Image 1 (cartoon, rainbow, N blue to C red):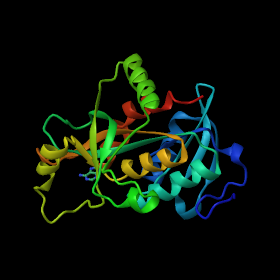
Image 2 (spheres, helix red, strand yellow):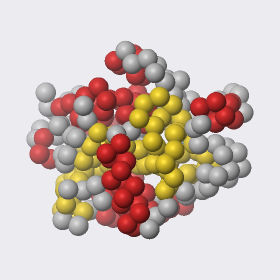
Image 3 (spheres, rainbow, N blue to C red):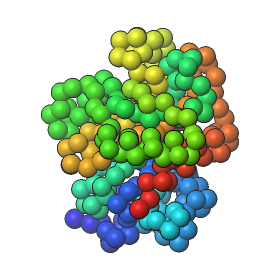
Length: 237
Ligand code: ADE
């Protein structure tokens, strides 16, 4: 059933088996322009840009997810189910819940805890924790090691809410569930991979910290995320 409601490519081969997913469409474009050769755009619906190219001669795609679980839920489902994508690596930003999560640190999500109803509504999944795919995580850990980039492996919080009235609630989530940082997509991505028998991972760079109130600017973020991108790009095949 292609094209899909949200992806306009009419040829599955235009999309690689592995797709990197930043939230921001312009970051997808930046990654394609900066790191990939032989780039071809395969999606522009709603400006959710998607590109395929090669990295060191190996094929890889990069497509935006948009923000939040409903958005990544749609795009990852269509890529897995209708374009036969096998691996999706989210590459995003997160807010640290502990002073140990320093600005620009790279975190690999071992699993995601969430109070979201996404997995229950989508597929009747009752637990509030979903793991990333261990085999992908092992490969990403090896790549980080080979590149000499320090990376923390930890549980993260996937939240539906960016602006909470009770700002202090992050402390409870850290204490009770052990989440070291917050983002807004991994739980839905991990769930879709699980129900469709596919693979998913989530690499994050700390862009702000709720405990220390430090934050990066959007210009600083563009370059600071290079470490995380280099690790993820090694997934090209
Ligand atoms: N992504 C980056 N920083 C975040 C935060 N503070 N909350 C949710 N998602 C984020």
